[in-house]
Length: 515
Image (cartoon, rainbow, N blue to C red):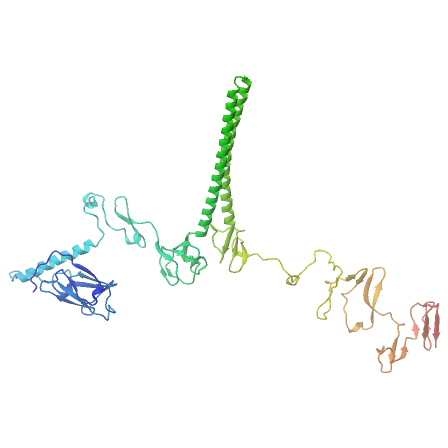
């Protein structure tokens, strides 16, 4: 049984891993090797598996690290070894009535109690606590209450202190994580900088990042809240500086004008004083001049005020334009440059598609340019007469030129009107074009019955195509059914007999031969 003093020491020792596997000595007394807790960095180690304990005769001892399980390799100076007293707070020995009360047993119980007290004291010193000179606790009639807020109210929040110094839930601030990067686990309230445009964002949904900057076009953009729009802030700062400079310049000019006016007034007063002896009227005039100069000074001050107002108005106008034309962006924005909702008519230039877009009130639509070639217009219409300017309308690749009116429409060529909506088929083989002088209308009509005749060759073909060499017979009808005149100077002939129908007149002013 151990028989040694339990000295007043802290039951905790912290080392770097520079000693490698150890041993790492501790100066507080223990009763059993299980009275320790050993940590490798933040990992609680297991006795025998991860470390061994050697106890000296006075109760102190040392720890030697064992690698292979929770300690993957020999510790280095960048690692940390912590040894802390951790005797189980329990009582396993009971003194019975009329039994032996041995000094060794009593010493062990008292030693355990002392060790328990030291362990609790060591843990208490690592806890948050109020100074001993603070006001009294609430239960003692004071105002200090170091009890934490409830779990539900403090979860995910920061710790702050009220006017009495008591812990309360703090304001919702963020954790600075530096420049945004891919494959990083971000938590709610983490704050990052977008290195591509220096915007500042705050995470609203825990996630592992992916893709690339800018965050505004990243697939995870909805998981971030824009805190600072760097480009907008820089523009506003520049505008404000320019406005301030302009206002200062205007104020300086106004002050100069006021000074000049005052100087002129003083000169007039001096002149009036010099002329007092000459005439009272001149003195009155000088006083009037002084009054006028004072008015000029007042007007100059008003000009300075107006200049400042103009600068403010210019800044407001720039902000209004900035809210309508949002500048260049790589994707469709969801809010304007002030973070306000979009309005119908807002514009921006999309650098990804190289297109100017406008907002309809519900969606971004590209502004479509006019056609650059008439070929691009699939449904062209003339807005006036087509002037060929001395040129021709020429088809390509031996193609036809089709002029097709709609429905019953006709084709007009100068004074002539062509009826082009007539059906054309095999039944119109012997039709002829007919001109109506009263209407200027040209149409396809059937040839008049009888009297036309035709030439026929020995092969039975009507009308030889070889200059008439194959035509042998002149074929015509035997009866004249319509009034006919042989004009003077014309020769006409008919074969065999010719019968003139009743009521039909044949007038011969030229020559007619019937053979």
